[in-house]
Length: 523
Image (cartoon, rainbow, N blue to C red; front, side, top):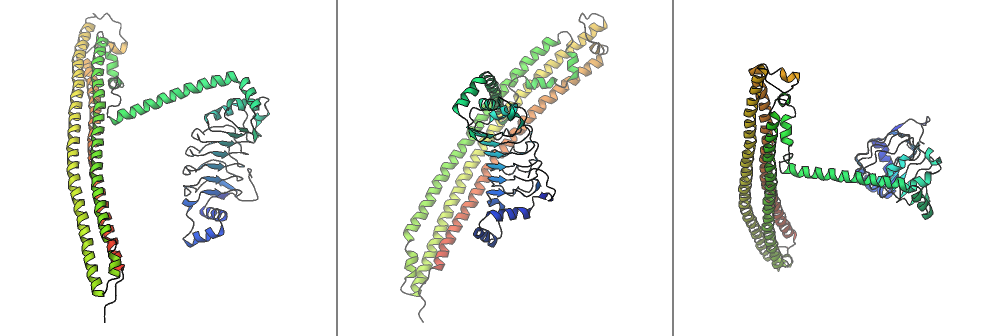
């Protein structure tokens, strides 16, 4: 179709169309079964054909969350959209439509076969996430430059490519260019790529492909480095010490401090600032290294707790299974014996006795569970005490190191104030030898002005140090609360589920007992 068909009105993908499409592709017996059970659940549909339906806009497909194959060819679709929920899609056909831009495919990471033939596309783009792509058909579009082919080099699994009917196919070196730049290609334009063609292509474009491979290797190295840095940053964040391994915090003190920037021009301030920076960064790095060690300690404590918990639970579960197995072995003939009792009264007596044994089993299992609850309660309390000590120790040491930062700032502030007042006095006496910018000389006229400037800068620095300390402390408090709550909630859920299991097992035994037929009473 791919062009506007004036004989039909554009259609919308609605529930009626979808229901009809699904019914058409299912055998009659399966359709009847589905209808009898309340209708077809779109979640169960794996393949969907919506070809030749004059569809203008893709919509309403979110219900097909397990779809693997989708045909939307031969419609009048103008935009690729509303496919983000189809994350299991492997095969997609959008050929013979009016699409101009490749887009909306980011979430289709499992896609292996994509057809965009007979559209109006002028650039191959926005397909970076389709790393599983094996077959790509984009013939009869508006691709004019062979540079589009270079984009396809990122698809290492691409084996079959169709480009026929695009303007660049008329170029003399078209085939050799494509084969040279896509060395893994097996089929091009529905034809097997011969060894001879491949050899000639590689020979003709060796220089260009070598350059590309070099650029790609550099780009990959940069990407891997960026990913490694991001992973490292996430690790530092988990340890609550991100950006403390260097001058990040110190630099942030001055990032928006216009007063300090002016004061830096005063004679002696630069040396003072460098000394301050060195000492401040040293404290930050000490805090950073300490934070990483404490993180490992926290992780080890949590891991040790859950390992011990697992051992205790495993032992309890094995004991519970043994109790049940012993009971079942001892009583596997009881129901049959009750059923074949010599009289009604004997059967009733045997039934009552067996029921008592079942109740005794229930009491034994519940007692075992209560013992488990008590044991785990002690384990959790000990864990909470250990966590509290670890968190408290970390918090105290963080406060101590941040106090060192504040002390350094206070000392720097005092010395800076002395230098500034001295500069003021020299300026008033015309004894300043240094050439200073006009906006710096403007504040060297009044002591109150310069004191206010120094104090304002000082307050900004203290505030940022306090904020960073607050972040670390809050993260620690949140972590402590989270691990404690998780351990407690896990035990509550475990106990609730275990009690349900016991009750269900006892109910099943009693139900079997009740259903056991016994002799009729004598008249």
